[in-house]
Image 1 (cartoon, rainbow, N blue to C red):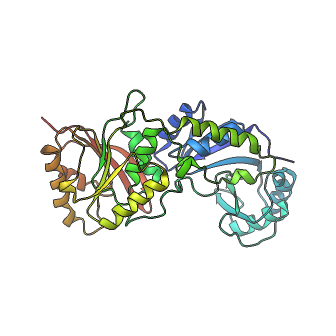
Image 2 (cartoon, one colour):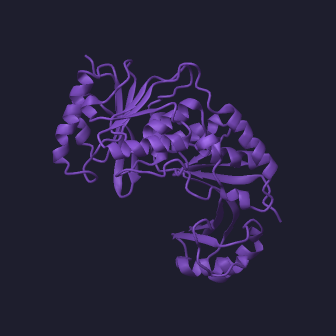
Image 3 (cartoon, rainbow, N blue to C red):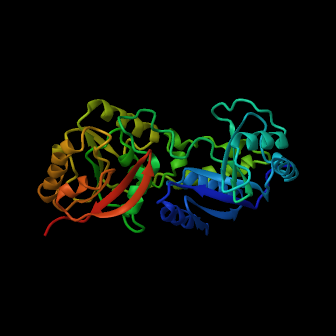
Length: 381
């Protein structure tokens, strides 16, 4: 039996980014129900295609294939087998992920064994690229969700070369969306990142300015591969038509594209940034230069500085970074006058050394840290 709509679809995102995800879905004509760490709705193949190809802040897009109540392993196996979920799971290796909370069923390995047996799938290794099935048991309610994305959606495909402490593509896009850099009307203002590393923020800005979906961030606007392409009943012709339509709409920045500049003092990471921009297909829209941040080549007209500067616990001791933040604040009150800034930091004390009013716009758990996005307006009196 093929996978047929309507699907109950769940788009996952980092906790704290849910409002951005909901806004993205609504812009696609989808009316989701917000959840902690995501948003859920019912839709067909087109919704599934759109969420995977277009969402900039989502990590994965899942489809619910079964739900039922179970309090014992035998009951779990029986109901999973009778649910028809096995018809949705494509042939090949299966990567089965189990989470249990506040339930009689709490032994994840035993749950995995019973679900595999119910689906007729052997307990084998799950190599990279295997179909991922998530089994969630909460308060004795069992939910089976199939991952439609495959590789995590933050891996656009263009960033094969990364520097130290890279920022995820989804977080770079989230920063730009949070401060409204692109806006809904008119061309976006200039964008600069004086600590650009391997170029993630400027490249995500160029993709956003050009209307290039993250799923097409490759040379020639080639689409990345998705797990749903292996599903039973996958409408390949419909998918190809959807991709072609998205490709036709992408890449239009007008006659006067916004200046987008990234700079860093490390020549090697700037070379990586240039190569990544080429791989993303936006090398003509973004310029990268080797320069310390005090000599960053900002465009002549002010706009937004969106950046991920060094912070404590990542590059060097926090105390030694206070001088860097003070110098950044002096630049904003001097040669960078008129520019607005948004920056990430894992230490809320460090941005205070800029000496300008800042607002905390995002607070996200990332790799054991609490990563915050601070933004401030033009610091002129």
